[in-house]
Image (tube, rainbow, N blue to C red):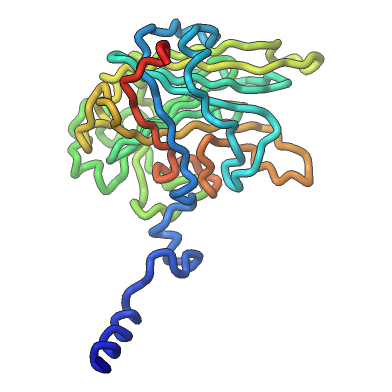
Amino acid sequence: MKNYLWILAVLLLFVRIPGANASSPEDTLTHPPCVEEEIPHYVANRTATKPQIDGRLDEYVWQNAPRSPRFRDLISGMETIHDTRAAVLWDDEYLYIAYWIEEPDLQATLTERDAPIYQNNDVEFFIAGSDGYYEFEINSFGTIYEVLFFWDDAYKAGRYDTIEGLAVGQAGSKPFYGVGYKDHPRGPRTGFFKWDFPGLQSAVYLDGTINDSSDRDRGWTVELALPWEGLAVLAMGDRRSLPPKDHDVWRMDFSRFNQYKEAPPSDDPGGWAWSPHGTWDSHVPECFTYIHFSLDDVVIQ
């Protein structure tokens, strides 16, 4: 018995207990900055009625689709000054995304596609594959910015470099190391900053007057339709079904960034999200919301 206890004691010196010393520097490289148990889960219903992509969100399917909780501070998870919510629907052809954005003073300046939309007030959407992820941003003018990223450890191994238009040097490719979370355990990425999602549809609707601070606005809404066939490049790594099957789970991120911040004593960073990341960085797929696809029709519930 004594020998057994001695061996056990020695083993414990070399085995790190999961969760122990979670704040130590080495753990920042192996644990994402968010808390797994706090990541939201959402059921995306199938719709038999195709929404018209006009940004208005006044159709029955959107009025009855389950909406996300109010977005929270991207870093702290605290409550935010304005309401922001999102919803997800799908059918055999498209993934549909909607945003409801409370905004008392509609402002935008950028009108050129792939301009740095994050320099305006915007909403953003990310969708993760096993080897990379897609980023979409839009401002209240309806100007969009999009990037396709691949993790460097998978880029050549997955033969993404052989896909037309996705070789290094094409589609505005540049190395990317994250924003605030620089030590991601998968390392650097390559971003294709001029890649366009094939067949993407997007629209915004303004409930107010843009760039006129003399009145008070209600806000704006955003509506997206992404063809499943355009997501084939993200589905390659794990060969996920397109469209998804009943109960398939994907990871997606939904956020909002503002050029203004709530006044002190608030510690508002200006970035809000459905699933807070615990860091100033949207590019952490491990913190994305879990989207569960359901064959249940939103219309008949």
